[in-house]
Length: 137
Image (cartoon, rainbow, N blue to C red; front, side, top):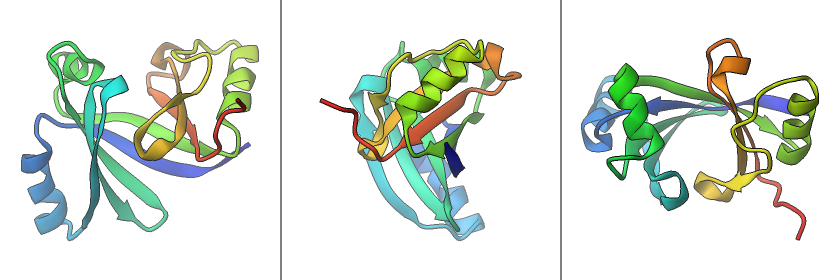
């Protein structure tokens, strides 16, 4: 079951440059910067109430964030919904006819279990399902 909006992912060319806006203009505090090699991305997280803003900076020339930036420029990349069970939520979406990018959860930033729904099935919005639950071994 979905519980809340967990975070909004924003693609940027440079976390260092974007961070100035989020800290100086908006007054938010960068809680952590983390590299997620499996996604070829460096992330920075800012909290605003219960929701986080995740800046996404590419770590390679051919990763998904690089491709996004080339197509669309900086801006909103995805919306992530917190679930109590990512695998079950992905299966529910699949049964409803949704096109999945990840058929099973993968490990994302902060050790969360994540999976993405393709924007062609979600009215143009890349949708992430995430949970802190670990997959069964």
